[in-house]
Figure 1 (cartoon, rainbow, N blue to C red):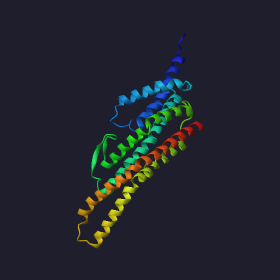
Figure 2 (cartoon, one colour):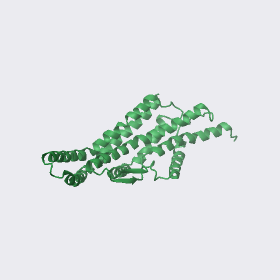
Figure 3 (cartoon, rainbow, N blue to C red):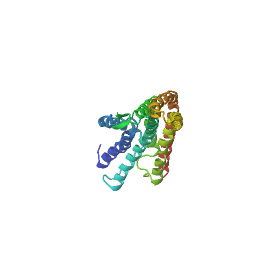
Amino acid sequence: MTVTDAMLAGWLQMYFWPFLRIGGMVMTAPMLNAPAVSPRIRLMLALVLTLVMAPMLPPALPLALFSAPWWLQIGREFIIGAALGFVLQLVMEATMLAGEMVSYGMGLGFAQLADPLHGAAAPMLGQFYQISALLLFLSFGGLLRLVQLLADSFRAAPPGSAMPDAVSFQALARFGDICFSGGLRIALPAVTALLLVNLGFGVMNRSAPALNALSIGFPLSLIVGLIALHFALPQLSQVLADLLDQAWSFAAGWIGDLHRI
């Protein structure tokens, strides 16, 4: 059997294109993109997924190495994989935003801890919400479903198809609204209770200025906030499941739109 340069290039690109898309997803997917996860672990995971998926994919058209279409194809595959992980990361950021809103209402905005998922300081309740969301994401089979979405993306938009256009990027940016609307849905019960408490102390401070409302309001806001969290946390799984369903549906539709470009 004679092995030609074209055959070697075809074999190389059979694994190279899936590796780029999978690598982009690993860099942005929830939990996998945390600084606490070693880059070596991400690389090994991307290689394993590539070795498993590449033989089952349709063959891609070989491109001349280092040509303009070759470089464009590299950017396309990496962008698609990064977009798939970014869509789910927005859901996790919604929980962090919810924790920040509740923290400021309780007067715990100063309670900052080192966040190992982002490598920076973050509100204590924000970390609590996000870690709870990550555990729920794992319990929902999120990583397995993410791998399934990745495999489906190769069938819906195989390597070598069209580059994402401006409309695709605009749709991805508009989906960022879920970070704000989802965070508000999660934090709304606790924020509403804390708002009523603060309004009550504002009225009391105006009617009786001699009372030291600050010394009474801070511990009472903290107690009311903890009680509100006790009753609001059981709804976190339901809201998170709804947000994840929206993320899965959007990602599948976004990949399908790429195939129709």
